[in-house]
Length: 119
Image (cartoon, rainbow, N blue to C red; front, side):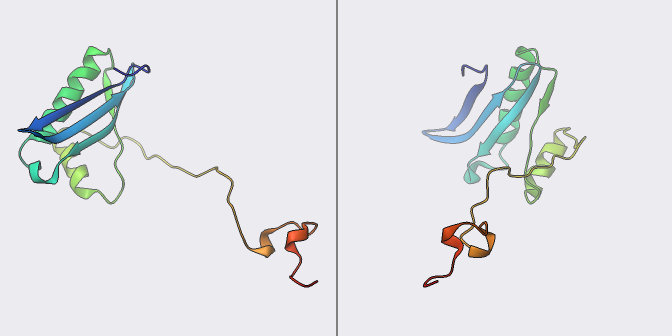
């Protein structure tokens, strides 16, 4: 268990890992990763991981389990929909980190580095 109350779990097929899952949360659990080895897909490994995660969420007292997938992961969308997951909302994101530009046009007029070479 992690200090934030999260947990990690994995399933092995013989000596090699087949899938791994991480979850965080207390009142609303968040599935942060569900990964199944490509060779093990369509063999029930993902369903076992998801079922185990749902049980852990309940054991933690979280009645809701949420997750995110990128828009282009259509196969993952179908997997979750087959298991009863819905898309109740959309999430939006914007990077708020400072943008770094090397263009002299983006520098303040009083910046000595903005003057053309040889001026």
